[in-house]
Image (cartoon, rainbow, N blue to C red; front, top):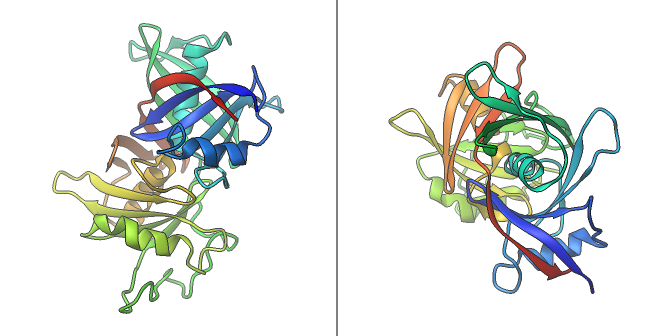
Length: 290
């Protein structure tokens, strides 16, 4: 076994181990994700993220994401923000900031993911990335490869003993999400585990339990496909905001409060794209056997 250098980062508590593949190699990322993600015997994380050069000219860099169970994810909003900070602050790659028109500086990175190219807008202060806005693209509200509802309104069915019914709304943000508006967001563990693998989701699903708070923000707890309960989920926050608009619960600008922090989400009418803004933070650097 060889030692591999890594950086642990988090976005609103959604923590991953990041490996710079432009400097080193990792033979079996799926197995490494399982080993390193273990919070008792490994580094401890929600998964593993690989940062590399883009194989196509339309993007600057690429990322691959492996969940804690070794499965590969298509997209992660929190990880994309962290990659922006990592590239700007920890590599020798020249990313030149420009004035954003509001008295601040902004740098742009085009990131290739399995769900397409995402544009990262890095908000710079004192040569540090203070926050990142990610253009997450257009939400997808119907995809039979990800969601096969029993009826036109969406999934409604018995999910555990006692015949409890769970009504929700499907939204894909490059990966599948099912958003349930409820007064009981703390059912995330028991119910989320069951819903992730329900037959209506051919490729399993990320599950959000959301509640509209008195101040207008949306309190959301997340069960991530392949990782379980996580402190936050960027794509999940986007899906929650879209679902809230569609259900008549909110306007197109919303604050999504999760266990690990808050993200600002805007679903713009002008281009139908969803924009996510939030922080990214370093935790520590290290080396581990892969």
